[in-house]
Length: 161
Image (cartoon, rainbow, N blue to C red):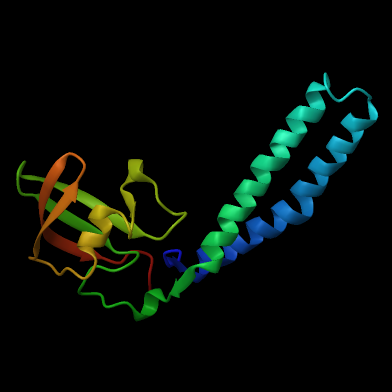
């Protein structure tokens, strides 16, 4: 069974729109290009035909991946989140207890992650360990490089009413 994917209504609608666009615009365009390339003759040495077939396969894989996320989605209503504990869409400032420096993470659902800017998945080791924590809580997170030790310094919900 697949894991449930938390996301906002906005992200859910965005994924559905992307799927619809890929299925109704992109795939027919690719099919048309395949037909044009097929009409050119010998398929063994027809680079355009093979390129478009590969493009078709990659696009179908993207569609399937997005459909899987939508099928396993559960919608989070940001207005109903407890503001005093870490939840989806929380921006959390933590203190690394080993290095005595601060880091900031924003807990997001699938498709919104951007590790370079500190947006981490709620299902990642750090994201999962932070969920439900309150200011002052300490936690240990097992990661590939070992254990990380954090203390939650602040929790904010930005851009949420």
